[in-house]
Amino acid sequence: KEVGGKSPLWARAVAVLSVFVVSGLMHELIFYYATETKASWEVTAFFILHGLCLTIEVGLRRKVSPYVKVPNFIAIPVTLTFIYITALWLFFPPVTRFGTDLKAIAEYGTVLQLLFSTNHEC
Image (cartoon, rainbow, N blue to C red; front, top):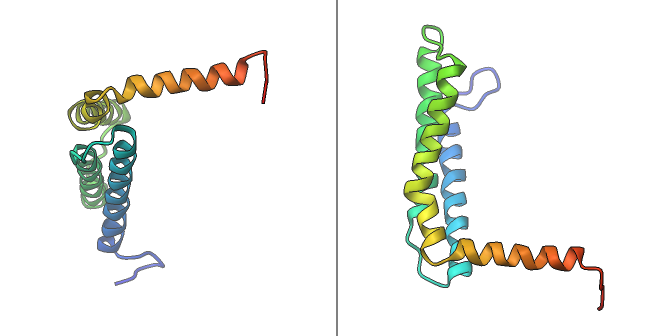
């Protein structure tokens, strides 16, 4: 039921989860083009996990917000630790497994050389 011009909580949860799923799939596609290997689905799992956790956090916040407020000096380190651990677990292994990180760094170096070279021949 729409209240005060806002969509229902379940509709917002579906929208948030959909965005995270699409983002995960797009990252899998980018990694496919960079590595030319089949998807490992680790990156998609990373984004789905974060979407689920964000949805749960928003739901809990609406339920307990009047009663409990987690101070920023606790919430920020907990959030950053969660992102760091899940990135090491799910996001970075596909990047480093096939040397994609090294290829990307080399390509960035080439672009920088082209941008800042004194000899601009076409």
